[in-house]
Image (tube, rainbow, N blue to C red; front, top):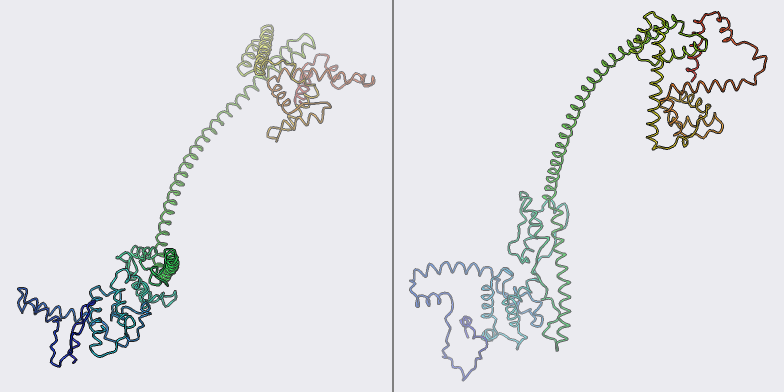
Length: 571
């Protein structure tokens, strides 16, 4: 057979060629027409295309086919001869079919054409026709070509092989300064390589330094949630179909599933490491963080400025209110001071008038010899004069002085006594009202329930009130302790002291007379046991009384007034 035998197409797979006789030297052989030129001739014969039209069409087709053929590997028979049919699973199926340049990018049509070319060249019959040695059965390397096409020609099997493609670069760029300085050059190829495993066809691009934050955020979100179709069933150590029974096949499937899950987990960790390293080296992230930080700081500052301005405005309004209140208070204080000055002036004038009227009262009564016919009556009248001079109002004093100034003794005496009687009746009426009011407030409780105050306790209370003025801390408790220290057997508490002090204040005049009377009685009792020699000695007061017996009542009156003032001052 000459070299033209190489152009003979091999018989269809499955048919058997048999010789029915001996070959003669002049034997004629039939050749099947193939090739693009025969195809063009066939199309012209069975269509309306002209020769020129086909020439234009075929020229473009020829250029496309020549371009595709350039992507196929050059024929390397030595590679095929090194293949072991028993280890067909470990071979590079793309290299066996001459598609090592295209690999996973090869189309189904390219795979078919590549396989067809391999069959035309390496089919056992073709090689036998060329006088080459062919191994028997499955031991021939053509079995590897057939297995390669069985894998790559089946979509599911091809995906399994592509998942473990030995030519796939699984390297992950490390986190280093070099990776940061050349981020896009280092990481873009890595992401493009691994993008082939994505179930989603639209895979975001890495972008460049001008890519917006939203696009970068979308890119990392996509890769952190990457959904891969890569699976590792091609790495199964045993095929399930080889199991002799159902249990054995189930056990094989379980072992294979465990191994696949382990490899799948390792693949997920590898992809996660790729994304983590890229995120750590991506200078855009730090840039966006700085911008976000500046934005937050600006927003915070703006918010603080608003709060500060609001606070300043509130402070300004508050100051205005305070200033207005201060001015208002100053105005009110000025009015109060003016009113106080007027009141003080009026009070001073009233005091002056009272002093004048009191002096006039005393001098007028003195001119009438106190309206007394006896010494006892004169002493009583002196007390009434003092009481009325201190307690009568200005109008009452003026009215009384007017009556006394008429010059008639009887009229003056009658007016004076009538005024004394009215004054005493008024004091009795006020005392009665006060007692009734006290009885109503106490709920009708009998006066016998109230603690009894001795004369000594009352006098000590008055001393304590003068000794511990208002403002003393726990004043009434202190005064109660003061009474307990100076009066043996006293059991008065702060509440009792306060109640008694109020009674003394409300019933000042009557209580003063009662205290004076009781004090005088106590004084007489304390001096009953005095020595007779001492009793025989006349006192200075008595001397004054005896010396003025002749009728110098002015000195007697002055002496009585001095003693009365001294007594009340002590109280």
